[in-house]
Image (tube, rainbow, N blue to C red):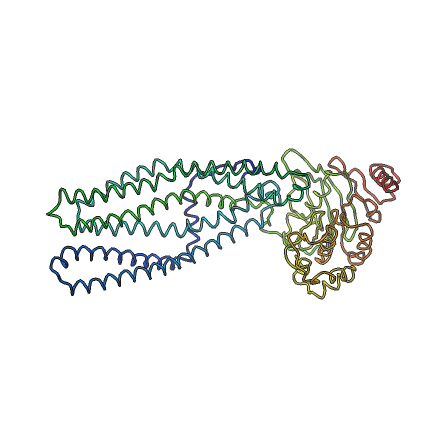
Length: 590
């Protein structure tokens, strides 16, 4: 997927049959079931065609000879064939539906598994609604392309061939009329296929844009209402919806060509068969034969109509399949090397001549170097946008640097297994997320092996146990999406505890207590001193009063570290840190 905004169309994919062949790999483990489905359908169609053959025999032989005993037997046989066709059809359609759902599940699982490992930068630069639609709508539609449409295509072709055999055995001359109609329809489809694909790609883009804006709006609904943006947002959404509608209407116009052509050709061919049979071939061709050919013709055009609808659906669905594979083919930038090491971290961190940019040629960090000793407590301060959070993200290797090296215990982070690295580093950011599950499960997120009793013990030590127990169901209280049923401060307290519970070797607090009142913040810091005693701790804070006890403080400015030392050392040199600290003290005193 190209980097874009909600109102910017994605780059169109080019058609490649290899994408469809790749999609067919999903049916391999269901091959035996699909073969059974195919056989059952064959039984159903042959049973139906024999009913027509019986009708021809009744008209030409049974009725003229007034053989009512034979007629009764034939009626019973016809009823048996009808019942057989109904039962077999019901069985194979049920089987096909189950295979479809299994393939939907397989595609979604593969796609979800892949996006779990895409870099954070992938999600930073793409509207989430455009990713979401591929996991839902696209995956569900594609499954029918791979199974239902594929099976239906084979069945329709098989049905056509069987009917054609019956037609040729009945009357070669009248069958040729039907073949002329097929040639005309193939020409019509071939001349409109490219236009239909182009229109479908446009629909996909407009639908994707609408989904992207919808998700963005829902996530920011409180902001929307706070700034009275409802009407403006309605206008934007209406414009996006109108673009989708216009694209859809354009496609409908060409989409109708297919079934209209088939319907017209079906009636024309059937009428021509009756006309030619009655006017030119009768009496050398019997009435039963003409009636049978008319019936065969009706049966013959039904699979052709289904086939043309399937081909239209193929054009639609293949564009979805291309988008899905486009996502699956997204390169996983942050991954383990083949010889990545599984090391136990002690907690030493070193940045050596590190430069980094989120966007090419726009550096956020420039040639930064510093070292943090194991179990050292350091703080990083600086103005907004100076690169403080970026440093913490690079330690956990959520991004790869442009140049230089980042070492953990003397080992380049790129040489350490990701799951091992991140298991021993816990980062609490200013904006955290709580999941729609119980408080206990949220606290154990990332450390599911810890017992409930241990979690409760830690909460007691941090003096939050009584508060949790005061909630409706205590630790089993289910949180709404992102803990909306809690205050911002309460959410941040839970996220703080979750970070501690992870028991890492390196703890990173990025504005971890910005939404907690000063009293609670000091209480948490005092209570956690013992728990973080043997850990390396990096703290980012705007309230400098919270980090004065740090072993060292780094001041970052203009993409570089310009000062470092203890609070007393930095105050004594009266530089950037001194000015920032004193300005905050003035505000507090006011």
